Image 1 (cartoon, rainbow, N blue to C red):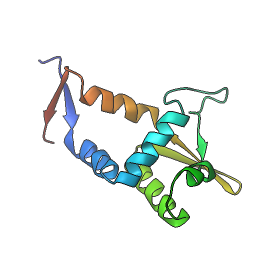
Image 2: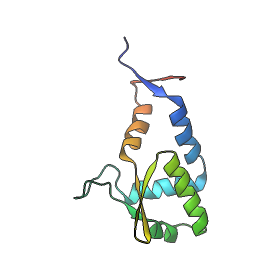
Image 3: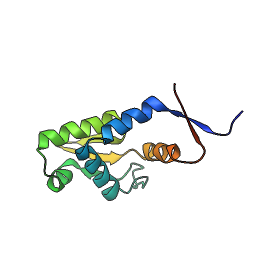
Image 4: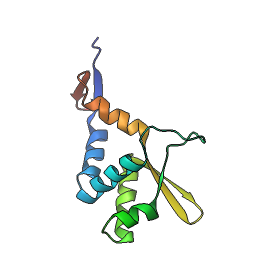
Length: 112
């Protein structure tokens, strides 16, 4: 039995497809920069950014931003949480670990 981890190709394909859009990649990059991935606050939740804060940093329509955030969420790359009228986004820390594992020397890519 091998010590190598088997990679779920379909799962990674979905993540990379979501990140292949330049705006989504920019959003993901902004969130990883402001949200300190893997950092946990006192409520045991990942530190998050308000969608309004992202909207101010990007040169895209709010409806387009919402669409891109929804696609990133569907791909499992980020979490979204509504608090009243505000929506907060945070990078899914386990996804970052998965992506790191993909590029580790101990991973073996095999089709499902």
